[in-house]
Length: 87
Image (cartoon, helix red, strand yellow):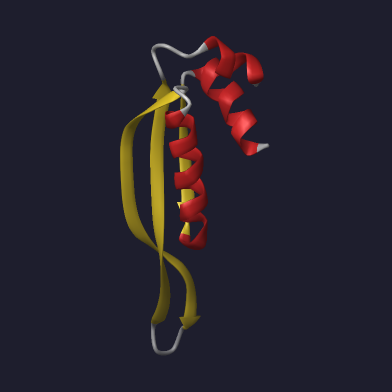
């Protein structure tokens, strides 16, 4: 379902930026790779960082850090008509 929405979105707006935090990162990578493999998108930028998720212990200053990824995809110059029609 998300894949078909992204197909329509990238066709209409020419780019999409996918963000994921923690355990959702593999899902976003799979979606991005599927769009690329089907000739709908090309990868323009990937960035990673670590973000503060929440304060665990205010007195001791312990914090929880999580990995974050952002993937910028742009519409491929030649989109196969069959792939777009399937959306």
